[in-house]
Length: 192
Image (tube, rainbow, N blue to C red; front, side, top):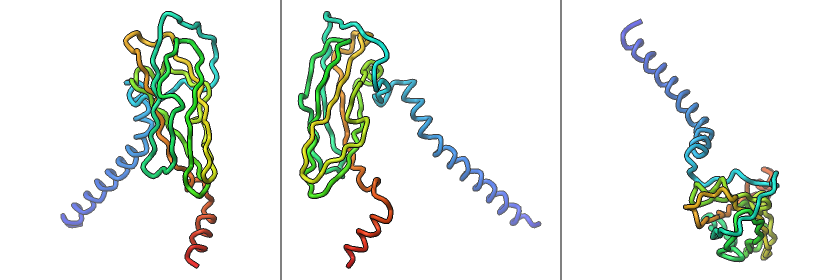
């Protein structure tokens, strides 16, 4: 084997190893990101969701301001707005509010809301008991719907946090729910 063939073989092995390592890194990126967010508290990902397993005492001596924001993904034509943009709550107190969603299009759609909390350190102290973000939200053409939110702020919320902002980003997931042949059939019909 001459020198050129050895170099080509060496380069091929290096490229294959690099490709495998890049694929492995890409595959592990999501779990690594989740671990990073859990450790640092970044991204405001909510972890306390669902029914509460214990009763919390209500701290009447303290009030926390909770602000609500609604953002649409750029491809989402719906209107989403909080019923109330801000609420003062006592830690430990179960609080109910809602968001209003309107589908102004002439077709049924399905949306998914993704929550985020700021400051991120408050995420582990915000317990969502019932939230429209737990499930996909279908709306018919022109339909409007009130979507409930029931939450509680834990009394162990650090004193320096006096305002929590709960934000929802709404995404259109309608295309992802259609069966493949339904998409093909509609494309075929529109071509005719």
